[in-house]
Image (tube, rainbow, N blue to C red; front, top):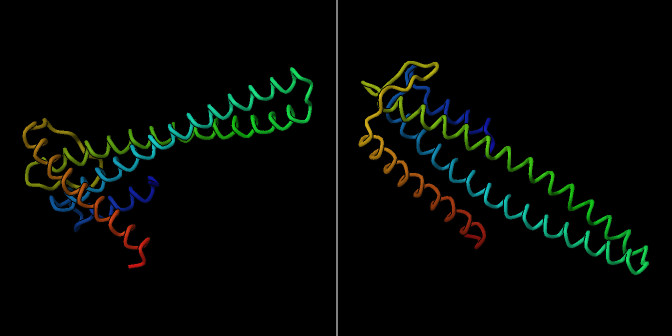
Length: 169
């Protein structure tokens, strides 16, 4: 998920006549939960892809060494080309994983900030930097449970839409 898009959606959800309403905050929490889940899924996928690239890199390097050992220069050259490609892809994936981790940290900080605003007295806080008050653990658990349910429902709906498109309905 692109952070700018997430930030813009959060700002739209929270902009209610200069105040952040409870409904807007709740919707923002749901959006953040969905974004967190999507980022975690992207992280797992990128880590798997990195592992595959590292295995392919090791294979290409091993094949190149074997080819050199038997004097097959052409196979060694081709293996070196593949190793270079896998090395570059692995470096790119490593940077991607770092960015996704940074994104997850950002999303988590935003979630904590919005959750604190949600629990603020009166249900609204003025626009600007959010300050985290003392947290009521039970209220936070209840809120997270509702946000989890809403996030799961949104994710299920998104998957359903994808399946419908795939089936042409």
